[in-house]
Length: 311
Image (cartoon, rainbow, N blue to C red; front, side):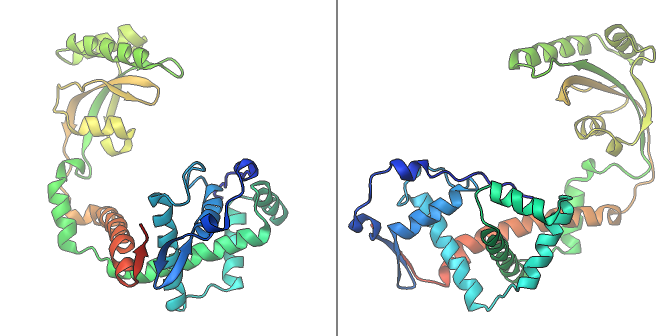
């Protein structure tokens, strides 16, 4: 369950009372309807609960005003397109949240109220987010498509990232543990030490000796034959780039500085792009959705409405 930050009234309690003119000042119009300082300030209060807008930002700042206008335009689209989320829809969503977090309904309500929200307010927020999701699905997801040709082009351009199925790599590994909460200087010192050790290694026997001397590993850091995709991501990526007999540059990952060496590669059969098509399709689809959503917010949505921002 997404945690909402507690809302504090401290800034409002110490602020001097605003004049009627400043509260009612028109900052912009949306399809002819005025946007006042008071409305934007109320919007800020709501958004500050989730830390979406810093509390010290002025209501008439371009950042807040733009966010308010975007929100209003989205709500107009929801209304114009007749998007409806029923109480039953909200009930099902909330029940999913309750089950996912392994909470009783009473504990879920208590958690919501502990964050400064009423239960009705929480349900209203859920309804609003579900409406937005339906709008985005209608406006964006249905218009994004990833073709087989795009998948193949990506595969060909990034082929080195995809180890052929069945490829097995004989790997040796050496790790220099870092202190807990290591400082930059401590990390730099360990990296420097790893580089010095790397300079001592010309072949497999050298790596085995260095690994044994540094870690006491009688196997000389021998991990045997592995699929690089099954390894820790940073180490697997490094292994994929090495030829037999090569040692990686120091890799800082998981609380240690690592060196890996490829002793031998047993190539598998080079599978067609279909082996990775779903993985690539999902990646390209997510990127396209994000790009299309940004364009929809900044361009398409604004073109459907008349927005006039006052100087």
